[in-house]
Amino acid sequence: MALTFHKMHGAGNDFVLVDARKSEFVLDAKLASRMSDRHKGIGCDQILVLRKALQSDCIARYEVWNSDGSKAGQCGNGARCIGLFLEMNGDTGATPFTVESPSGPVTMRRCSDGEYEIEMGQPDFDAGAIPAELAADGDLYHLDSPWGTLEFGAVSMGNPHSLILTRDIDNPEIPAIGAFINGNAAFPEGCNVGFAQLAGPGRIHLRVVERGAGETLACGSGACAAVAILRRSGKVGDTVDVILPGGHLVIKWRGNEEEPLLMKGPAEHVFRGNLNE
Image (tube, rainbow, N blue to C red; front, top):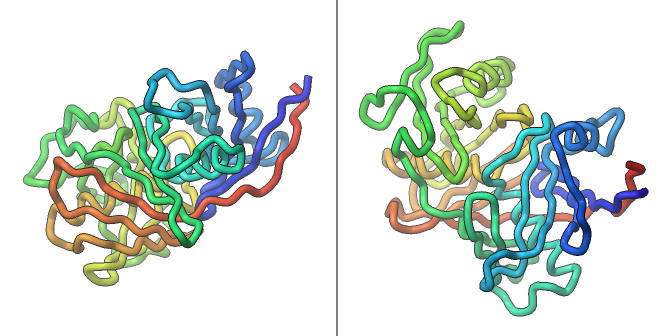
């Protein structure tokens, strides 16, 4: 049987979306890895599976699967692609609208320029919420590594993130350093690793090495995590342009941990196809 899928991306972070709201489609780690394979499958960073909503105030819910077959708890770029797909399908009506993500409800709206703005939830800096089995030194953590002692901030955005400040965003060792932290025992559930270079209080350059996917062209939750960590330490302002290898996101947060971060960015539908199961 052929499986219908949609190829989409948000700032270069690419997805395979399957609308399973009217089917019994079951995805497991083996099939997820096969679909994500860029040589023998469709090819993507993550797979999005759209399901019927469980909550009455949501119009749909979705799962996020990494390219290695593991599940993810949040995906900002994927959420924007979900919003675009639901709009293309005539399901959204007036904006804003709310969908269920693996880490809770996500409210979004279509902007006048065609991009989507999403409420990404509140950051949680508690080590147990990340989770991180490290003792914090103020707002920072330290970890011994082959590159010396790594210093970074960490936060949960519904999934675990750490952030290292760098003076060289083009450092070729970034993927290896990120992979080292991804699977380090200090993060029992793994950790997405961001590398940020400051370009002023309203602009940063960012690369993200994601757990289960490796370095991607963009990471929405990673952009939010970076701004949350930097805003908390006073290094950026309330509105930050985040420049990623695949595109540009705008993150807004006033530093109040009771308020959600807002993320604005593009979403594009690339093509529709069928995969022979």
